[in-house]
Length: 286
Ligand SMILES: [Zn+2]
Image 1 (cartoon, rainbow, N blue to C red):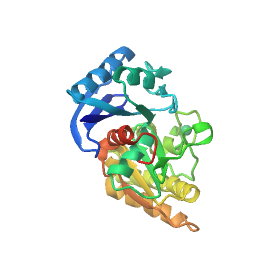
Image 2: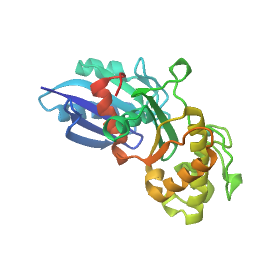
Image 3: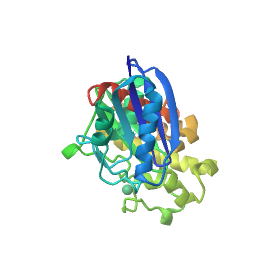
Image 4: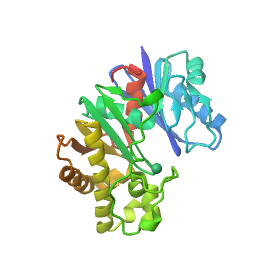
């Protein structure tokens, strides 16, 4: 027997799960992300050893923030300054003598939704709205890559927005008017002066309108069968928020069939479950 190991390496916590070939979770654990690279690597190895128990690790899949080189497994997550140009595939693969795959967390989350969250459609677009915003697009269960193998940045599009405090809009990428600056957790704090959970109803309406405009562009350009939304802001706004955004999208999409729009079914486990899928399947079809 052997196990497959999924890792979700985030800026505040690292989650790990051991699963069987069918994806049944056997054991799981989590630890806070530390301030040093060496401590984080030690923690990854300790979690792997604990979760494997006496079994062989047959494959490891990992989700981490971009940017990264998915072919060589070299990562430099933007929000983890201690991690720069780290050859994670080489480090983990040689330590555990097994195949290792790592990809951008939103791509991996899309794999989770596809494989374990009922999102197995031909073209699935997964979007996370949390501190920041990003997406992963799967075509027939495989990650769609941009030019040079790059990761499309669906949140850094401009939209026809509504905003009650327009002078406070500023995207962290340096451009003033990206969708992310209007709907992400950090954007919300900047514009409305409160976290998402402190928003008034009319402020949620404004954010839902802006999200709907972004979905409209994505629907027209990508033509996905379904758009799944996860992350703290999407989950916090819940069905009423998603329904409003969907309505705005539908009003503005005339020439293509409007995609299904739904909340993630895996909650905060999307990337972890995707990492399990990655451990089992590699970069092939999820
Ligand atoms: Zn931007």
